[in-house]
Amino acid sequence: MKNSLMIIILLLLSGNFLFGQTEEEVHRWKKIDDPSGKQIWFDASSLDTVKGDKFDVWILEVYKPPIKFAGLEGEVYRSKTLYAINLTSVKYGIKKIRYYDVKNKELYSFNYDTPPPPTDELRYPYPIMENSPVHLVIKEVFGNK
Image 1 (cartoon, rainbow, N blue to C red):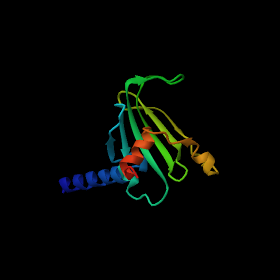
Image 2: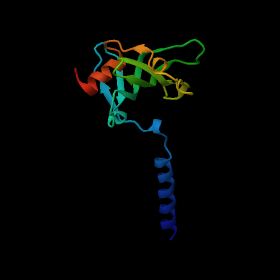
Image 3: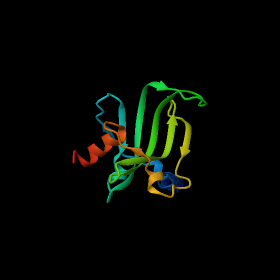
Image 4: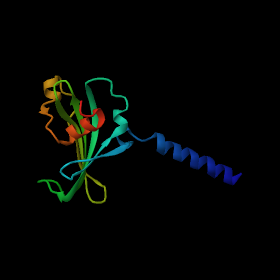
């Protein structure tokens, strides 16, 4: 009886852990071959259901050597950025960014989409440059079309 109760408690706790995760915590990272040698991954699970010319994708970058920002305590070893991409205008915007230290502890985060920009010009202000992380993801997902 005691063992059965322990098993039930463990199942309930593990269920709360698995189903209590937020959307940002569940990623399926796929490595990108970057011609410059940078270490870049994108969340392939977010692109499984792309059905149009506008979509969001998380991109993870590793920095060797680590980078420093004024006003930020510690060195940044990796960043995770949520990009909003518009294939029609060939532009992108940044929705969220997260910076992490060597122990994968979040150093800083910012949500640019709170509140969301009211127009596409503000939502997608940056041109997609050749061989940028966003361009490499597009090439990986859609090929050289």
